[in-house]
Length: 352
Image 1 (cartoon, rainbow, N blue to C red):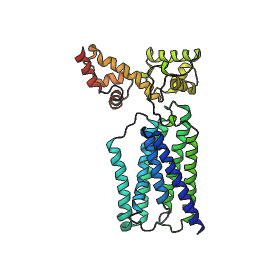
Image 2: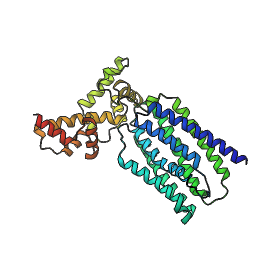
Image 3: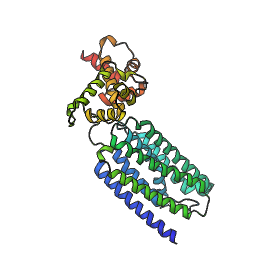
């Protein structure tokens, strides 16, 4: 009885906190993709807090099954949220919705028909393996793109938010698999609820400690000119910026394989954090790869518009500019210019 009372209190507090967080995110950052996905993730987490149960669950009612389906589909939202949070050029595609719908539909069918027919243990293992797969994708995205983040204040907060959510989701999935078929999971349920409430509270606290615009930028990512950035310039910083621009214009270091912010910092003989701050605060970039790609695309545009290079394949121009393959080059080029490289070349030839 005592555990049941604690469960209800923890569920109620967690759901209320998540609903407030979702409303706050949507109201403040609903115009930004990462903000909308964060609000959707908070709503899905509220469905999870209402619906989940470790151990051998009772037969699922038709009213309860949609909540479980939303909770399961939330791992897809979490993966998309990390994509948008760490890659501000990320855009939702139609197939993302299909992936979410497929996972949620499978969970619903599993609750209503597959689990009763084949046994709860097998269905629980299947659902939680799917959850672990998407959590692994999200963590991989976090690790792979963290170093390119140029906004110092959000780097640690972003990693904390994603790591905390992934850690809870991963542990929850492992517990579900390990204790499926067990009839004595009341204590595990209560502990899990307490951990979830603590994670949600910690994430809310962490988000209050950083400017929301750092996490969910509403302004364009790139300021085209350093003079547009309202930062008091120091002569030492300006010398470093000039040296950095010489590396880009004269040495064309952006062409090199696997160039990193550490590579540039070593050449400039300064710490990485200082170079990251300079590129972010003085040049207006929020992502290091976007900074590199702007120089690469500028070179590619010049080559595509050059009549003497009219017969040079687009893939050659892309590789010469520093891109590793044609696909990323085409996407970055179209995102910048609004047309494909081939269309851009044709337009320039027609204009000439």
